[in-house]
Length: 194
Ligand SMILES: [Zn+2]
Image (spheres, rainbow, N blue to C red):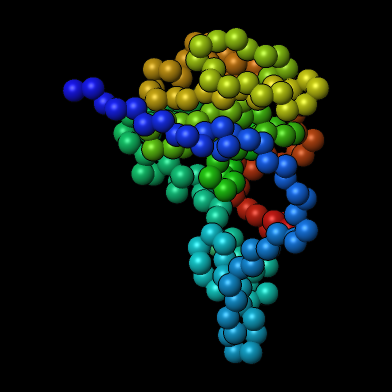
């Protein structure tokens, strides 16, 4: 059975370019809902829907997860890959490892790579002074004159070796060492979030 093709008579009209007038009205700003709590205005948290007063908002931090929170419900395969990735990085030398929002940051003077655990893979982003061309690298983005962010996806323990871990070491070496003498591991502190 052949399907009848329906022709749109007004196709030409539709395709005609319409000149856009500059919008006169300013776009509506999205405002978070507020309620009054004991005479004080409480604003809904964008992340967790809790209503918080101005003072509470200052210390509120529902969006930063700890490293454990970010990795505890990973499937077994990914957990193995994560543990191998972490221990490989630790062997590079002094650094800070901490959770920030939904990522785990590996940092010297600045972040040299970070991991964003997803349900089916670990999204890893590392920074090099050159652009890699490799099928394992899904995306490269130049983030400064001399810095290139490389995105890869890790699915298995077996992938955390060879070229990939060499690149991570290169990223570690490329990043200047921290000036701070203190190297805090696992410090998920966010005292100065504002
Ligand atoms: Zn919240």
